[in-house]
Image: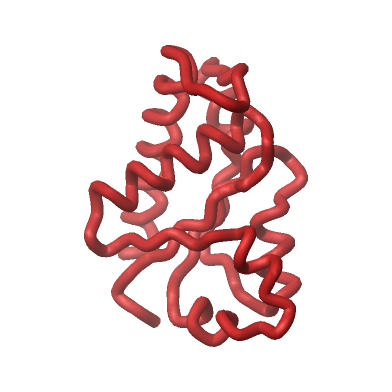
Length: 128
């Protein structure tokens, strides 16, 4: 396994999908040991050219909705997910709700901070 941790965010067109993408982007900017996975590229890679590279990383999946698309895409390619975050579940626990799938308002930014904190907790868990 690589020393880096890969974050795989939801690419869905929901408010929680946007929160997922922004939180992952922020974490990647703030940490040198974090990379992000493009789920569009991953799902379009029918030849599996990136599969071996992705298997080098511990992966944290950040799903926007309950469908778990990030996990399904990776699992269908035989790529293990180390940890999973359900954005909707975490936000419900914190009584926070994003409503706009296209722009972050004050509530959306609050949601991003909550998810960033959850991602950072999961990174610490993976690191042991």
